[in-house]
Amino acid sequence: MCDDSRRWRGGTTLTEVVVASGLLLICIVPILKALTAAQATSRIIEWRTQSLALAQGKLDEIRARSVHHYDESFDERSVSLDGSYLCTVKDTRHRDIREVSVSVGYDRDSNGKLNHDEIGVTLTSNIAKLGPGA
Image (tube, rainbow, N blue to C red; front, side, top):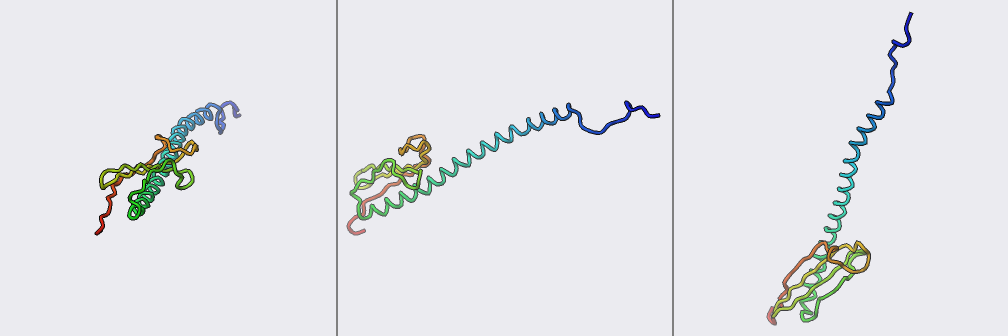
């Protein structure tokens, strides 16, 4: 004679399922937060890397133009370089040398203006006027 109440029944109880689900939830939330933060950081790094490449290209273009057009101003405001990337050039003249600053950034608010908080990279270079024998 076997007593059915003494028999062990295999399976999972509702309490075990609730505890396991709670532990899983506690573990997944920090992982999801870390993945979200990593994605946002990755996007910022991508914007800054692209901004750096575009700023270097713009500065090289200005240097090349300055050989034949040194007396022209290189100032520009919020010029589109590559889709949503904008560029501002500040040209400061000194005697026989000029300081050129190129700021490039991603236009996050899509207003067509490069705002201070959108600037990813600023490169500054001095360009000297070539003499007649150079």
